[in-house]
Length: 442
Image 1 (spheres, helix red, strand yellow):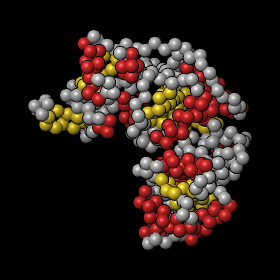
Image 2 (spheres, one colour):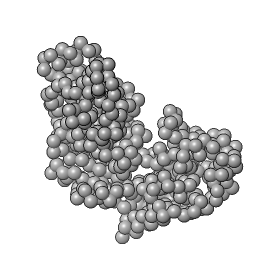
Image 3 (cartoon, helix red, strand yellow):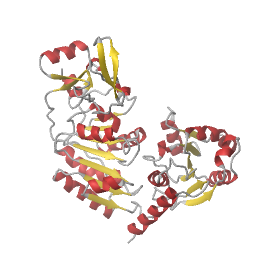
Image 4 (spheres, one colour):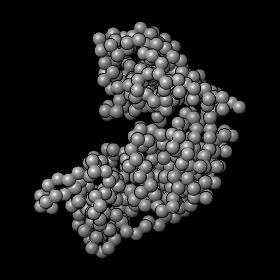
């Protein structure tokens, strides 16, 4: 019973698909511990993801209902929610004792980091939402440690959510090292079942569809990132996962105008933790690169840049606008150096390949925007092929550029915008980076 309570507390779950025997579920329902509700409400809203759009709540003929039924297309990857399926939650709240275990972090914050950390702590004390607006490499995660410890010490349950799985996988071991005795659950598509009641949950924002009134605080990292910034249901999921009146902390290097306007309490850091400016992108024309890759020809300027990095022993990341282009380019790069690897969202081995780049086992990596955030490689150099492509908005270009120069030992990484004509988004990204540097050194 305790294991079932620990699992279901704060969760909203498909009745027929829990990691517990159905007999245990039915017994808890009869005894009044579990609340049951229909998957699709009477007003045709999904009770899990709160989707209400007629395009997403679809009718069909159902043998179980012996007539018309509805199901939610929006969150179907998490198991189908329909009119005749039940969602279950644990009725009673879980009492959390104050956290008094070890806090292992001996680093020092810069003056700007310390100021932001204190401002955030003050917002948490007053139970109000807050935005951390800090450039790539400012040390956003480190300034969260003390306020996070404060919240846990007060017996609060906390979720750190991010739109990308890679960001969660990068953050989770760092938090576990800081709070070694704390139970932390890490949830993402394909993650394995973790028993127990976690005080700290690391999750992709999609996983919050499965939570309801669970957390005293949610920290949304990379709050400007796709798909969170484009899918209103993910913002609803964050709100649904919170206990009534609980605050949200947003963390972003490139917050949208809407986010800047909606969160009045903000901390801004426009200087990296090591005190050096952000690398300013260099424009380099790469005419007809699409045709070159289609015809199995390596653009000379790109090849020269790769050879230069190989000769200097500098690791590199080359971003591409499409997976198709990565696949076309990969054999051409391997002709230069067979060790160069390629990753994208559909690559199950991308985590291992990034680790190889970090360990110096491979010289460079070709990637989609899947690695534009949450990845830190010492001394990495960045090239963006097709920086003029429509898919690359200014915020994405800034994030990709932000992979370079993050280390205090190597603060002056190179960023090249390879293009087939300068775009407005390229200029916007470079102008913003210059403005951050100006603001950060006033």
